[in-house]
Image (cartoon, rainbow, N blue to C red; front, side, top):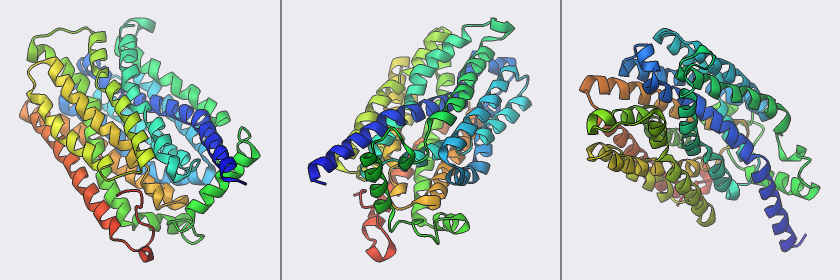
Length: 453
């Protein structure tokens, strides 16, 4: 087969995967992120008052979700590798949709804690499973682009989800429910419906995709098989069970990436859970008055530019190769900007600086997730990606609880957001160290992070 024909098959195969699978999995992620952050819209719009929540209690309720997720994350991703993404992702969605629906009738803080924990148990493994699933469909040179398109769902969840949540909250009295309860009802049902559709729509591997031509299926299968040769988890010994877990859990790069991810996700969820509350405080801080829909739209403002920056940043990384500064640079910008936001003299200036932070976080994340599959495959990849994401879930718990506790302790958000900045600067430093260490590896010790320079 000539080079021209080979190139045409490659372009056609990647385009079909990008059109057929990425939007649907991104839609699943959209609903996933909306359900886990819906509590942030409910708290300043009636739930906090109705359930008599302090900032620390709300922070704990926000963060306890991640304890359940952490406990089952690695086992869930191993189960996905064993049973296939179609069955497992569909099961996860239906389960979390049912739990999310129960928030409609929560009556006190104890019930809120319980349901948030169970929501984490139900959602466990979805995000690393989706990353693993998409990574198994495209070669590494296309992975940053595909993961970037997938990751667009996260900032767009707030761009679209915040006004949607505001609209649901304004339906106060529907079915005899308070507005925030209507909101929980409205965002839970789509998860159940999508889970049912996913069972019939998703396909586990390229070899089974009837919507690809035989040439496209063969090309994808060959490319992915050749690429996996020599990676951790590619041989029979490390490809299954305990050996795969050992290969991932004893890999120093996996643990370093886990710490880098911790810093980014700490910043992400500190914003996600407390930005609506910070905006709600503008009235006291600056003497402004906003309606429920005004606050929802202001909450969405930082995330639209973040989605745009994410798209072009991941596109640049795809075209020119992933560089250390694609990840370390945004970490520095985010680490500096987030505490600076607190010293702005108006709502507009505060939101503008928070927008810079959001752009920094979202620019780095899809590029970051292209790295683990450079040196892990098979069951080791399932375990390694889940382990890295577990660190993110630890950060999610810590960000919610610690931010709320420090706010109650100090009376303001200065101290907790300085801590956010410190964690993001830690991520930048670790990324620089990892890249420098990877350059020093020789072939005897395995494939280095060749694309990170």
